[in-house]
Image (cartoon, rainbow, N blue to C red; front, side, top):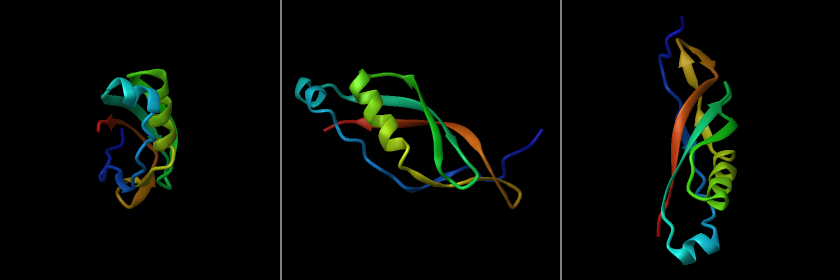
Length: 91
């Protein structure tokens, strides 16, 4: 069993493009994603755990794939890790 000594940290955040139709309808909220961050800090997977609308889910996933993290560490070694992350849509 391995213990993470440092969790990943966001270095570059990308705001999702708010889908025009959803914004017009006043839909707000959060898309919760299960993301896999590799040992170099790149997001390799972004699976929707809590959905808003298909368009908002897709926008959140697209933005998440462009995030850059400082990777998780076990001791001094960078490792891949899965975490939950919330992308909020509001105006």
